[in-house]
Image (cartoon, rainbow, N blue to C red; front, side):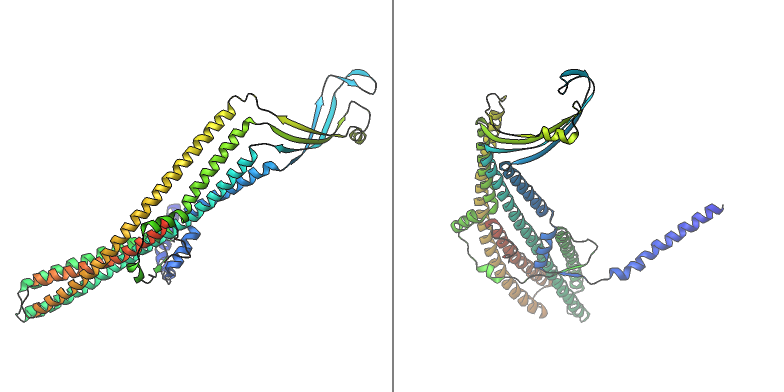
Length: 451
């Protein structure tokens, strides 16, 4: 019974501590939000992005492979030592007879070898160097992709916030109209049905605000995920200024394609991998050629079969050698033929990858140019729609106040005005997105030049 009471008391104490945690953590969590500008977002993403880290690791592996290939030209130097215990008959050189005894032997020395000629080394080194350079270009393209992702998420957040602002302004206007209609109803100038209808419109506008607010919060979560921010933190994302110059900018497909072919680092990486594959093919074919190497060594030994002491034997038996080694493959179980076939297929695959990437770049630039022109037209149409909707709403409001227009007409005019305001927000940020996408497809989007 005492144990049960003690357990109950312990559980109660733990429960009280758990209940007290929110009160303790409340003041600590009420901290100032971290302000993050667009430049800050890019910096954070470049520091934390997993794809960029993996690309850098892959580039380091390519550099290690290059160092390994270059090391084939350097001589090696080895120290060897071995000992053995033999049993049975042993010839005694001192006495000139065969004895049945156990013998201990020690052999030690240094050896070195240097490749004088091997036709596969130079193309292997060139292939590794081209692979390392392609890896560096992959890192650069990954950085551009990170910047593009951050810019896309940032634009999405700003666009959703602007849509929320439009919905909030619409709700405020509808609420003001509801109050005005209520006055008209009390004065007997409008029917009660107008008030009920306007109350329904206000409720619909309030629901639109809720949906827009949720969309803005989800866009902020997406940006936090891209930047790998702590979900428990508080953040304030500062929107950059809208660049009006984008609406007047013009692009020509031919000049864009020339720039993309010259500046797309991923295309350069594919071309380097093609050159590396061709060098690997040369290295594989070189397996049929002879190889010449220089070998040198200096050794000594000790044996317990003689009466001389350890150091005297090491001194008497020391000696060195220098020699040349020639290796000429005659039958290698089709190893060289199979390696050559694999290298030829790899080179053909690399050539196909270059052609596909060239086609992809051209289509991306073409599509981006068309989308950018369409975004410019959409913005101009949205601006015209907004001007017309504002004039129409102003006219209908004046007519409604004097009783010349119905509430249905006013509601329709307000809906058109809200739709126009939402359309111009979407058009403005779609134009910014298309320009950012254009820079990304051309290959000029980087942390230093992103707008």
